[in-house]
Amino acid sequence: MPVFKTDGFQGTSVKFSPFIESRLAVSTGQNFTFVGNGRQYVLELSPRGILQRCFFDTNDVLFDCCWAECNENLLLSACANGSLKMWDIARPPAANPISSFEEHACEAQFVDWNPVRKDSFLSASWDCSVKLWSMERPGSIRTFIEHTAYVWTSTWNPQHADVFASSSSDLTVRCWDVRDPNSILVIPAHKHEIVGCDWNKYNNSLLVTGSIDQTICIWDVRNHAVPVTVLQGHSKGVRRVKFSPFHENIIGSCAYDMTVCMWDFSISDALLARYDHHTEFPFGFDMSIHEDNLLASAGLDDCVYVWPHGFDPRA
Image (cartoon, rainbow, N blue to C red):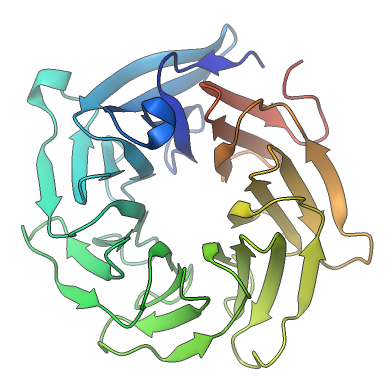
C-alpha cells in the first residue's frame, strides 16, 4: 500500500479506528517535534491508497492521539502545551476542537480511552502525573502523582475497567486502580527510561514494557520478581510496544534504530520480522483490531505506512 506523506509534519502516533476498519488517526508536529505547530490527521485506506479525510491544526506539537470508544467521530490529541484536544471529525475544522482539557503543567505524552467502560480516558504527562478524565466534566476526576520523573504512557487494562498501568523515566511501571489514589503495584522494570507499556489482550495479568535500554520485557503482575521473558534485538532505545489484538503471544515495537519489529515471545527465536522502511525515527506504531496482521507506523520522516505483516511496507 502506498505511503502517505505528512509533508512538513513529523509523525508521533498512529491509531486505527475501533469502529471503521479503513480509518486511522495520525498525530504530528513540526521541526522534529522540538517546537512548532501540530496537525491531527484523519486518514482513510482505499483501493487508491491512503487518502486524507481531514486534519486539524494546533499551535503546539501533538505527541499522541486516541479514538473515543463511545463515538466513531470523536478523537483526542495530546499536546506539547499540556492540553488535550477533543475533535469531532463530523464537524468542519472551524468548529473544532469541541473541548480542550487544560491541567497538565508540561507536555502531554499519551492518551488512552477506557475500552471497557467507554466513558473515561487517561492522559500521561512530563509533569510526572497521570490524570483521569470524563467527557462530562471540564476538570479531571483524579490525578495520580507517585512517579518521580516523566510519565510516558498510561494504558487501560483491556478487561478490568478500573485498572491501568503507567511507565516512566523513573525506571518503574506502576499499576493503579482508579478508585485508589495510590498505586497497587510498582515494578522496577528496566535500568533506563521506560517509554512504552501495554497490556495483553488475552491475559490481563501480562504487561509488556519497552525501554531506552534497548530491551522489551514481558511481566506477569501476579509474580513480577523477574520478567517472563526479555526480548533483545533493537540496537537503540525502544519507543513503543504493542500486544497483538489477535494473538496472545505476538508483540510489535518501534525504536530509535529506525525499525519496526514483530515478535513471538512464546518461542526462543522470538524476532519474527524487522522492517526498516523509515529513514527517521518511527514514533508511532499500531495494529488493526479489524484485520489480523495489518500494521501501521508513522515517523519523523513525514511518512505513514500501512501494510500486512510479512510484506515490504514500501511495496
